[in-house]
Every structure is written in C-alpha cells, then in structure tokens.
Length: 384
Image (cartoon, rainbow, N blue to C red):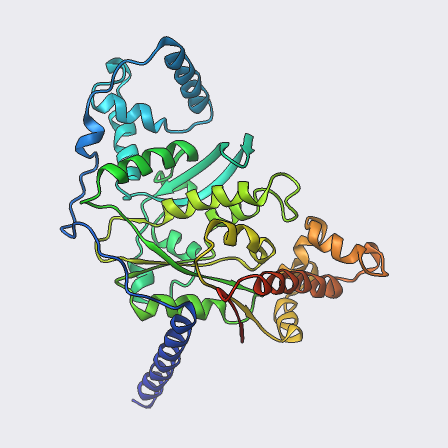
C-alpha cells in the first residue's frame, strides 16, 4: 500500500508538471482558433469522383515520356502511383492492372498511409523551382499510443515501432515524392468536403539538445491529444532541411524550402476528422538550417530551446567514448564546424572531442541567434 501511494504521488507530480509545461509552450507558440473544417462525417472516398473521370488521349510524345518515367520508376522499385490509379478507372492498359498497387496508391491519397522517410536517389536534383529523384516512403501510422501517453511514446521512431513500419514489416510503400505530392494536392483540391484534411502548421521547436525539447513536444500533444498531431524528430523534414547542405553549397535556400513545404504538406494530411493542428520538433542539428524553415513557412511561429552550455555538454559527453557523443559525430562532416574553426586561431586537428562538442553547440546557437534577430517576433528563445 505504501508503495502504491508513493507511485500515485509520483504520477500526480508528473501530470502537474506536464500540464504547466503544456500551457507555457502553447502560450509561446500562440495557438489560435482553427479555421472552419469541411465534412466531419469521417467518409474516406479513397478515389474522389473527379479523379475517376475519363481523360482525353495524350499525344504520342507525352505517352512516350510517361512510359520512360514509369520504366525508371520500376527499376528503382517504386510504386507508379499515377499508373496504378489510371488503371483502376480504365485509363491505363488493362493487362497491366495491379490491384495491390492501386490499393497502395489509394492508401497514400486517403492519408491512410503516412510519409515516414525521404531520401535523395542517385539521380536526385533539387532546384529552385522543382526537384527530381527524391524517394518517399509511406506506412500506415498508428498515432493512438502517442496521443494516449506521450511520455511513453515520445519520439517519432517510437511511433513507427508501435506502427510496425520497419523495413521487414512489408508495410512500406516507396514512391516518387514529386508524383505523390502532385497527386495528393490534386486529390485534395477535388475532394474538399471529405477526408483527408490538411492540418494547420501551428508551430515548430528547434533546440540545442538536452534542454527540455522532448518535454515541449509532449506538452503540445498532451494539451489536446484529439486535435493535435506532433512529430518529434521525424526523419522526412531533416532530409529537406539539409538537402542543399548545411552551407547551401549544393543548392539554394529556396530550393530546400520548396522541398520542405511538400514534405510538411504530406505529413500534415490526416484522415482523422478530429485532428486540426500540426506541430514539429526538429532534430537539434537542423537549427543550422533554420533559414530553410523560415523561407518555407514565413508566418509560422517557432522557438529555440537552449540551456547553459556546460550542462548540455555534460549530458552529451556522458557516454563510454566521447567520440560517439552526438555533439562530436559531425565534426568531420559538418562544413559549419570547419568554418567556425577556420575563423579561430587554432587548427582543426588540434581540437579534442570535448572542444568539438563545444564548437558544435556554438554553431547551433550562432544560427539560432542570427535567425532570431531577423524573425520579426515570430521566433523566441526559451531558456531551459
């Protein structure tokens, strides 16, 4: 009995702290009343009526180009979404009709399958006005465990584990991202009175690491589990945020922002009629590319969580080998770290792992400060 009472007191304390954090974080992010919704009946309508209409025959040149794209898609092991949907309504070639492929394409359109990973293929190209060769992976996600108990399922990887979205599960659907976005946007335009809906992006959390960011994400979920969807360090956005490199050596801020907008759009599509608001907590390293987020979502509020550097370093370096610490791993791959050191009076090879950790945190805070000064009130620094 004594042990049970002690456990109950601990639960009450956790709930009290989480509630206070919820109110604080949501005050910072400025939650507002959402816009009116469409049909709340929960109808699926996997292929809307406008998607099923017959289309006019295309010129031979366009058909040949489409055939080449489909062949390339097949070589890469991707689901040809457009062809699967056309075959289902009699536009494609009947002898190639694949019911399983059509069902998978419909899962993506209806938001029954969610975007879980993005990768740049060997022929990928990201430019200001478009991108090609970007591969998207979808899987049906069960958000219920996270909504019911955020501290037990705090990270996106935990949500995926509960949803059986690993490579061996057979639940992964791989498609061309650009094709998926085009089809999803078209479907949403023509299916305005039914599910899925596109959730409003209310805010984002950037952070220094080991500074309470997971508590912030859990608070955003716990405040209103039915209406909120929270992605905590999910994989797809970081692929876009870093697609041009930390220093944008491979392409421009605009190019990576366009890719990020499409990824967030797909992740914000919901077949749950109760969901309304969307939140993201990004990985700490993405702070170096805050410009991309601000270019993509110039009116969305964001916070940067920070803590006394020595406390962060002590937490980061509390591992058997300091070379494996998160703040040290990127020392050879991060151009921002090398640029920071080049500006100093020291040589790269003279730095210890502990000093590399300090430089890593310094680059995050420098980027955050630079963006906060230019954020016109949309960004806020929050001390741990």
